[in-house]
Length: 104
Image (cartoon, rainbow, N blue to C red; front, top):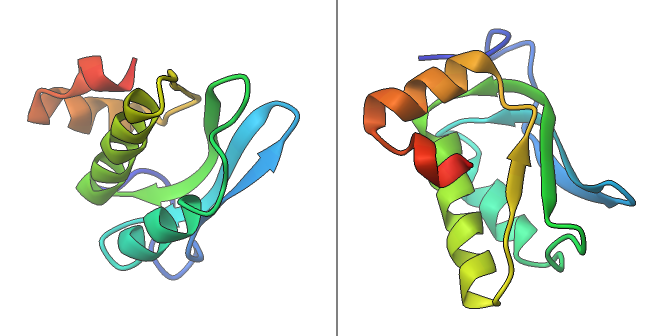
């Protein structure tokens, strides 16, 4: 299941830090999920606990895996994360896998 544009239209995604928290832009699929997650480890978790996925151009179940890993990291660090602006299709995929409560 795909959220957003086709694979050749969306480049590999990345997180960036801003005053509003982390902002994600690009694709988060099997092809780039490991690299995206690894790169996220170099960033301190956002002080306000917000991760904005409004710039997510393409996603598959790998995006859910990255989001759950980020939530686990936050729990380990005694923090909470809120995933914001998730595409409806990704939320639907989370429901299919029974993990929608982990994204809230």
